[in-house]
Length: 267
Ligand SMILES: CC(C)(COP(=O)(O)OP(=O)(O)OC[C@H]1O[C@@H](n2cnc3c(N)ncnc32)[C@H](O)[C@@H]1OP(=O)(O)O)[C@@H](O)C(=O)NCCC(=O)NCCS
Image 1 (spheres, rainbow, N blue to C red):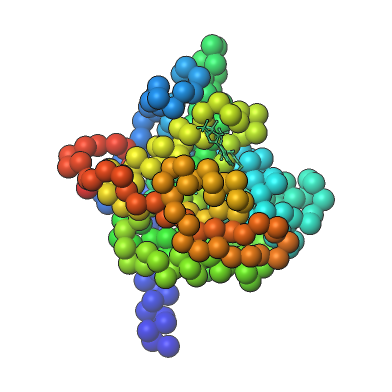
Image 2: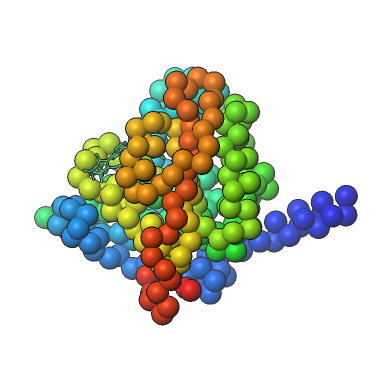
């Protein structure tokens, strides 16, 4: 009991840390930066950190991206709601997840800039930089959900199976966990997703750590394999035709000492 309380207090105190308090350990916000020309996005496309004020817009982009994603269509109490209620429930869940990872500062947006200099958030990639090794568990803990204000329905038990596989895998070992990755359906197929994924993977590579993610469709699995991710386990979840997959990608490059690349670059 005393141990449990000590553990709970420790989790709470770590989750109480603000992005400002953690900058020394996790790096400084990335200023808007043009994406490399190799990703073949429209001219003017840039990547930038998403902070508190951007998170509602990010939740809308992700809600559109994940509208047909099995994680949400199979989620009892969300996937079965009428359209407007489902939109609100998905944005609440996604907004909650974004708040859960916000303190570590690794939520990035890919923005398109048009000829009138108007900007549009096209893709969001939200990661937990688990440089100590336990931040992903911390972010996904019940305490974290409670602190982020989650009071929605619980997913099917089977939906937690991959998380259990993940916990066996990199526990205690530094990694980058890609929690949310999705693009506005209006902007698909123009390289914004490639820009986001490459940005996250570059951070993992520069840090010299594996990238870890879960995905719920076979087409996504194939897509990630092209980027060097390998399947670790697969699980079947009620209401989903295809298995959910846990994937890990080893870093492709070694740490480059002194190289600075926004958040995640402190090595
Ligand atoms: C994943 C996602 C963000 C990609 O966005 P995008 O802007 O259309 O991607 P891009 O235009 O940069 O395409 C990059 C490449 O990925 C491929 N690709 C993109 N999404 C893919 C998918 N879901 N499955 C298979 N291939 C995909 C494209 O064909 C393209 O291939 P190429 O480089 O060989 O030409 C977008 O499809 C999306 O939001 N999907 C729904 C949410 C989702 O499934 N997210 C991943 C959850 S794990």
